[in-house]
Length: 318
Image (tube, rainbow, N blue to C red; front, side):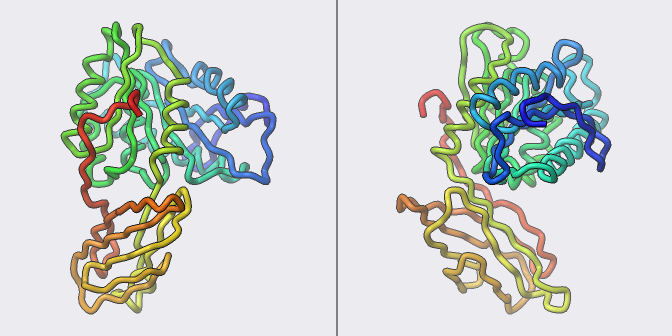
Protein backbone atom coordinates (compact mmCIF):
# COMPACT_ATOMS: atom_id res chain seq x y z
CA UNK A 1 0.00 0.00 0.00
CA UNK A 2 1.19 3.58 -0.61
CA UNK A 3 3.24 4.92 2.26
CA UNK A 4 4.32 1.47 3.48
CA UNK A 5 7.33 -0.70 2.66
CA UNK A 6 5.97 -3.86 1.07
CA UNK A 7 7.76 -7.19 0.64
CA UNK A 8 6.56 -8.73 -2.62
CA UNK A 9 7.34 -11.55 -5.01
CA UNK A 10 7.13 -11.04 -8.76
CA UNK A 11 5.43 -13.99 -10.49
CA UNK A 12 7.68 -14.54 -13.53
CA UNK A 13 11.09 -15.29 -11.99
CA UNK A 14 9.84 -15.67 -8.43
CA UNK A 15 12.15 -12.90 -7.24
CA UNK A 16 11.47 -11.16 -3.95
CA UNK A 17 11.78 -7.41 -3.58
CA UNK A 18 10.90 -4.51 -1.33
CA UNK A 19 8.70 -1.76 -2.75
CA UNK A 20 7.95 1.72 -1.49
CA UNK A 21 5.23 3.83 -3.07
CA UNK A 22 4.91 7.37 -1.64
CA UNK A 23 1.87 8.16 0.46
CA UNK A 24 0.95 10.90 -2.05
CA UNK A 25 0.87 8.47 -4.96
CA UNK A 26 -1.73 9.45 -7.57
CA UNK A 27 -2.42 7.04 -10.42
CA UNK A 28 -3.44 9.94 -12.69
CA UNK A 29 0.23 10.88 -13.14
CA UNK A 30 3.25 8.82 -14.16
CA UNK A 31 5.83 8.29 -11.40
CA UNK A 32 9.62 7.88 -11.65
CA UNK A 33 11.11 4.63 -10.39
CA UNK A 34 14.49 4.03 -8.77
CA UNK A 35 15.69 0.43 -8.50
CA UNK A 36 18.48 0.07 -5.95
CA UNK A 37 20.83 -2.93 -5.77
CA UNK A 38 22.25 -4.08 -2.45
CA UNK A 39 25.86 -5.11 -1.93
CA UNK A 40 27.47 -7.96 0.01
CA UNK A 41 25.23 -9.60 2.59
CA UNK A 42 25.05 -9.34 5.58
CA UNK A 43 26.80 -5.93 5.47
CA UNK A 44 24.27 -4.67 2.99
CA UNK A 45 20.80 -5.99 2.23
CA UNK A 46 17.70 -5.14 0.21
CA UNK A 47 16.06 -4.20 3.51
CA UNK A 48 18.72 -1.58 4.27
CA UNK A 49 18.58 -0.20 0.77
CA UNK A 50 14.80 0.25 0.71
CA UNK A 51 14.76 1.99 4.08
CA UNK A 52 17.18 4.64 2.78
CA UNK A 53 15.45 5.08 -0.54
CA UNK A 54 11.92 5.04 0.92
CA UNK A 55 12.65 8.28 2.78
CA UNK A 56 13.95 9.89 -0.42
CA UNK A 57 11.03 8.53 -2.42
CA UNK A 58 8.51 9.95 0.02
CA UNK A 59 10.12 13.39 0.04
CA UNK A 60 11.04 13.60 -3.65
CA UNK A 61 8.00 11.75 -5.04
CA UNK A 62 9.25 8.62 -6.74
CA UNK A 63 8.71 4.86 -6.39
CA UNK A 64 11.63 2.87 -4.95
CA UNK A 65 12.33 -0.85 -5.32
CA UNK A 66 15.06 -3.06 -3.84
CA UNK A 67 15.25 -6.61 -5.23
CA UNK A 68 16.96 -9.56 -3.55
CA UNK A 69 20.02 -10.33 -5.69
CA UNK A 70 22.54 -13.17 -5.99
CA UNK A 71 25.49 -11.73 -7.92
CA UNK A 72 26.44 -8.78 -5.73
CA UNK A 73 29.12 -10.18 -3.44
CA UNK A 74 32.15 -7.95 -3.13
CA UNK A 75 34.10 -10.61 -1.24
CA UNK A 76 34.76 -14.22 -2.33
CA UNK A 77 33.62 -13.35 -5.84
CA UNK A 78 32.98 -16.38 -8.07
CA UNK A 79 34.98 -17.05 -11.22
CA UNK A 80 33.74 -15.20 -14.34
CA UNK A 81 31.43 -17.90 -15.82
CA UNK A 82 29.61 -18.37 -12.51
CA UNK A 83 29.49 -14.64 -11.75
CA UNK A 84 28.07 -13.82 -15.17
CA UNK A 85 25.44 -16.53 -14.69
CA UNK A 86 24.45 -14.93 -11.38
CA UNK A 87 24.33 -11.49 -13.02
CA UNK A 88 22.08 -12.84 -15.75
CA UNK A 89 19.78 -14.20 -13.07
CA UNK A 90 19.76 -10.81 -11.33
CA UNK A 91 19.04 -9.13 -14.65
CA UNK A 92 15.95 -11.27 -15.15
CA UNK A 93 14.83 -10.53 -11.59
CA UNK A 94 15.26 -6.76 -11.95
CA UNK A 95 13.35 -6.63 -15.24
CA UNK A 96 10.59 -8.85 -13.85
CA UNK A 97 10.31 -6.62 -10.77
CA UNK A 98 9.82 -3.60 -13.03
CA UNK A 99 7.11 -5.42 -14.97
CA UNK A 100 5.40 -6.29 -11.69
CA UNK A 101 5.49 -2.64 -10.61
CA UNK A 102 4.11 -1.52 -13.98
CA UNK A 103 1.18 -3.88 -13.53
CA UNK A 104 0.09 -2.09 -10.37
CA UNK A 105 1.27 1.49 -10.74
CA UNK A 106 1.56 4.26 -13.31
CA UNK A 107 5.28 4.30 -14.17
CA UNK A 108 7.06 7.09 -16.06
CA UNK A 109 8.92 5.03 -18.67
CA UNK A 110 11.36 7.86 -19.41
CA UNK A 111 12.37 8.16 -15.75
CA UNK A 112 13.47 4.70 -14.63
CA UNK A 113 16.88 4.66 -12.93
CA UNK A 114 19.20 1.97 -11.60
CA UNK A 115 21.66 2.39 -8.75
CA UNK A 116 23.65 0.22 -6.37
CA UNK A 117 26.24 0.39 -3.62
CA UNK A 118 29.46 -1.60 -3.27
CA UNK A 119 28.89 -5.12 -4.68
CA UNK A 120 25.60 -3.86 -6.11
CA UNK A 121 27.70 -2.19 -8.79
CA UNK A 122 27.92 -5.56 -10.56
CA UNK A 123 24.15 -5.64 -11.10
CA UNK A 124 23.93 -1.96 -12.04
CA UNK A 125 26.49 -2.18 -14.83
CA UNK A 126 25.48 -5.58 -16.17
CA UNK A 127 21.73 -5.01 -16.24
CA UNK A 128 21.82 -1.26 -16.87
CA UNK A 129 24.28 -1.23 -19.77
CA UNK A 130 22.42 -4.09 -21.44
CA UNK A 131 19.09 -2.27 -21.21
CA UNK A 132 19.48 1.44 -22.06
CA UNK A 133 15.96 1.31 -23.49
CA UNK A 134 14.74 0.78 -19.90
CA UNK A 135 17.16 2.70 -17.66
CA UNK A 136 17.66 6.36 -18.41
CA UNK A 137 20.80 6.58 -16.25
CA UNK A 138 22.93 4.45 -13.93
CA UNK A 139 24.61 5.32 -10.64
CA UNK A 140 27.37 3.12 -9.18
CA UNK A 141 28.10 4.21 -5.62
CA UNK A 142 31.56 3.09 -4.49
CA UNK A 143 31.11 -0.05 -6.51
CA UNK A 144 33.09 -3.23 -6.89
CA UNK A 145 34.32 -3.68 -10.46
CA UNK A 146 35.87 -6.33 -12.68
CA UNK A 147 36.05 -5.79 -16.44
CA UNK A 148 35.60 -9.52 -17.09
CA UNK A 149 32.07 -9.32 -15.70
CA UNK A 150 30.86 -6.53 -18.03
CA UNK A 151 32.27 -7.62 -21.40
CA UNK A 152 28.90 -9.14 -22.42
CA UNK A 153 27.39 -5.64 -22.09
CA UNK A 154 29.31 -3.93 -24.89
CA UNK A 155 27.21 -5.06 -27.90
CA UNK A 156 24.09 -3.65 -26.23
CA UNK A 157 25.48 -0.54 -24.49
CA UNK A 158 24.29 2.92 -25.51
CA UNK A 159 27.07 5.56 -25.57
CA UNK A 160 24.51 8.23 -24.70
CA UNK A 161 23.40 6.61 -21.43
CA UNK A 162 24.90 8.55 -18.46
CA UNK A 163 26.81 6.36 -16.00
CA UNK A 164 27.71 8.03 -12.71
CA UNK A 165 30.57 6.59 -10.65
CA UNK A 166 30.92 7.85 -7.08
CA UNK A 167 33.93 7.08 -4.89
CA UNK A 168 35.23 8.28 -1.55
CA UNK A 169 38.56 9.96 -0.95
CA UNK A 170 39.38 7.55 1.90
CA UNK A 171 37.60 4.48 0.55
CA UNK A 172 40.30 1.81 0.67
CA UNK A 173 37.82 -0.90 -0.38
CA UNK A 174 36.61 0.34 -3.77
CA UNK A 175 38.31 3.60 -4.77
CA UNK A 176 40.80 1.84 -7.04
CA UNK A 177 38.01 -0.26 -8.52
CA UNK A 178 35.95 2.86 -9.18
CA UNK A 179 38.90 4.32 -11.09
CA UNK A 180 39.18 1.10 -13.11
CA UNK A 181 35.47 1.25 -13.83
CA UNK A 182 35.75 4.82 -15.12
CA UNK A 183 38.73 3.91 -17.27
CA UNK A 184 36.88 0.91 -18.75
CA UNK A 185 33.78 2.97 -19.52
CA UNK A 186 35.79 5.68 -21.25
CA UNK A 187 38.00 3.27 -23.17
CA UNK A 188 34.79 1.79 -24.58
CA UNK A 189 33.42 5.24 -25.45
CA UNK A 190 30.62 5.16 -22.90
CA UNK A 191 29.29 8.25 -21.15
CA UNK A 192 31.05 8.13 -17.77
CA UNK A 193 30.70 10.87 -15.18
CA UNK A 194 32.56 10.79 -11.89
CA UNK A 195 32.32 12.41 -8.49
CA UNK A 196 34.69 12.13 -5.54
CA UNK A 197 33.27 12.66 -2.08
CA UNK A 198 34.93 13.10 1.29
CA UNK A 199 35.03 10.04 3.52
CA UNK A 200 35.30 6.28 3.29
CA UNK A 201 32.93 3.50 2.16
CA UNK A 202 29.58 5.26 2.53
CA UNK A 203 26.28 4.85 0.75
CA UNK A 204 25.23 8.40 -0.30
CA UNK A 205 21.82 7.70 -1.84
CA UNK A 206 21.13 11.46 -1.91
CA UNK A 207 24.04 12.02 -4.32
CA UNK A 208 22.69 9.40 -6.72
CA UNK A 209 19.25 11.03 -6.55
CA UNK A 210 20.75 14.44 -7.32
CA UNK A 211 22.53 12.93 -10.31
CA UNK A 212 19.29 11.44 -11.64
CA UNK A 213 17.63 14.84 -11.35
CA UNK A 214 20.50 16.41 -13.32
CA UNK A 215 20.05 13.79 -16.03
CA UNK A 216 16.41 14.76 -16.51
CA UNK A 217 17.37 18.42 -16.87
CA UNK A 218 20.54 18.08 -18.93
CA UNK A 219 20.58 14.85 -20.94
CA UNK A 220 17.66 14.03 -23.22
CA UNK A 221 16.56 10.42 -23.42
CA UNK A 222 16.31 9.45 -27.09
CA UNK A 223 15.72 5.78 -27.92
CA UNK A 224 15.23 4.96 -31.62
CA UNK A 225 14.19 1.44 -32.55
CA UNK A 226 13.46 -0.60 -35.65
CA UNK A 227 10.88 -3.36 -36.09
CA UNK A 228 9.92 -5.76 -38.86
CA UNK A 229 6.56 -4.83 -40.34
CA UNK A 230 5.39 -8.29 -41.39
CA UNK A 231 6.93 -11.70 -42.22
CA UNK A 232 5.57 -11.52 -45.76
CA UNK A 233 7.30 -8.17 -46.33
CA UNK A 234 10.84 -8.72 -44.92
CA UNK A 235 12.38 -5.62 -46.52
CA UNK A 236 10.00 -3.16 -44.82
CA UNK A 237 11.02 -1.69 -41.46
CA UNK A 238 9.00 0.33 -38.95
CA UNK A 239 11.00 3.03 -37.15
CA UNK A 240 9.96 4.61 -33.86
CA UNK A 241 11.61 6.74 -31.21
CA UNK A 242 10.91 7.40 -27.54
CA UNK A 243 12.10 10.87 -26.67
CA UNK A 244 12.10 12.85 -23.41
CA UNK A 245 11.59 15.77 -23.59
CA UNK A 246 9.30 15.42 -26.59
CA UNK A 247 10.76 16.21 -30.00
CA UNK A 248 9.51 19.06 -32.17
CA UNK A 249 10.89 17.70 -35.46
CA UNK A 250 12.44 14.49 -36.84
CA UNK A 251 14.78 13.60 -39.67
CA UNK A 252 15.39 9.92 -40.41
CA UNK A 253 18.12 8.97 -42.88
CA UNK A 254 17.75 5.30 -43.73
CA UNK A 255 21.27 4.62 -45.02
CA UNK A 256 20.17 4.09 -48.63
CA UNK A 257 19.98 7.78 -49.66
CA UNK A 258 16.31 7.94 -48.62
CA UNK A 259 14.92 9.97 -45.72
CA UNK A 260 11.73 10.87 -43.86
CA UNK A 261 10.55 13.62 -41.55
CA UNK A 262 7.76 11.54 -40.04
CA UNK A 263 8.02 10.66 -36.33
CA UNK A 264 7.42 6.92 -36.97
CA UNK A 265 8.03 6.13 -40.64
CA UNK A 266 7.82 2.78 -42.42
CA UNK A 267 10.59 2.36 -44.98
CA UNK A 268 11.01 -0.38 -47.58
CA UNK A 269 14.58 -1.21 -48.59
CA UNK A 270 15.33 -2.21 -52.16
CA UNK A 271 17.62 -5.05 -51.14
CA UNK A 272 18.88 -6.88 -48.04
CA UNK A 273 21.96 -5.64 -46.23
CA UNK A 274 23.31 -3.79 -43.22
CA UNK A 275 22.34 -0.13 -43.00
CA UNK A 276 23.32 2.70 -40.67
CA UNK A 277 20.17 4.64 -39.87
CA UNK A 278 20.63 8.15 -38.52
CA UNK A 279 18.01 10.08 -36.62
CA UNK A 280 18.19 13.78 -35.81
CA UNK A 281 15.57 15.29 -33.51
CA UNK A 282 14.98 18.92 -32.63
CA UNK A 283 13.75 19.62 -29.12
CA UNK A 284 11.60 22.52 -27.95
CA UNK A 285 14.69 24.58 -27.03
CA UNK A 286 15.86 24.26 -30.69
CA UNK A 287 18.75 21.98 -29.74
CA UNK A 288 19.39 19.12 -32.14
CA UNK A 289 20.51 15.64 -31.10
CA UNK A 290 21.61 12.76 -33.31
CA UNK A 291 21.34 9.03 -32.73
CA UNK A 292 22.30 6.06 -34.92
CA UNK A 293 21.24 2.46 -35.39
CA UNK A 294 22.88 -0.33 -37.34
CA UNK A 295 20.15 -2.57 -38.71
CA UNK A 296 20.27 -5.84 -40.59
CA UNK A 297 17.62 -6.19 -43.25
CA UNK A 298 15.68 -8.46 -43.39
CA UNK A 299 16.49 -9.86 -39.92
CA UNK A 300 15.69 -6.60 -38.17
CA UNK A 301 18.53 -6.87 -35.63
CA UNK A 302 19.67 -3.50 -34.33
CA UNK A 303 22.63 -2.15 -32.37
CA UNK A 304 23.65 1.36 -31.31
CA UNK A 305 26.38 3.02 -33.31
CA UNK A 306 29.34 4.43 -31.41
CA UNK A 307 29.49 8.07 -30.41
CA UNK A 308 32.36 9.62 -28.52
CA UNK A 309 31.85 11.73 -25.40
CA UNK A 310 34.48 13.89 -23.69
CA UNK A 311 36.67 11.63 -21.56
CA UNK A 312 37.07 14.25 -18.84
CA UNK A 313 33.36 14.68 -18.06
CA UNK A 314 32.80 15.35 -14.36
CA UNK A 315 29.44 15.01 -12.64
CA UNK A 316 30.37 17.63 -10.10
CA UNK A 317 31.14 20.25 -12.72
CA UNK A 318 27.81 20.16 -14.54
